[in-house]
Image (tube, rainbow, N blue to C red):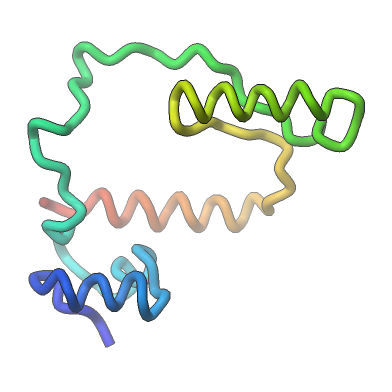
Amino acid sequence: MAPSIDNESSLFNFVVRDGNGVKGIVDSGISKVPQAYIQPPAEQIDKNNATKCLFPPIDLSRLDGPDHDEVVNQIVRAAETLGFFQVINHGIPVQLLESLEQTVHNFFGLPS
């Protein structure tokens, strides 16, 4: 059953407790982003003054070899500095990534 997007408790239960996640919200056919997912204007990124990230993607295929410690240090440095990082050669099927990307675009493409 689709959650009431105006009721934060119902939305939380649907997404977290019932395990549907944000994808479940999109799949339920909502037509606008729930208020709980809209960042207040004061906390939104100022795109005009943002800086470009200079960390290269981290190659996870190198974890199983002599470069293991270097890769781990790259992950730690990126996580501590930026809070996130991009990885390549992770073994996740392209079809799954494309499906996830489409779902995310559908969700964030909804009107506020």
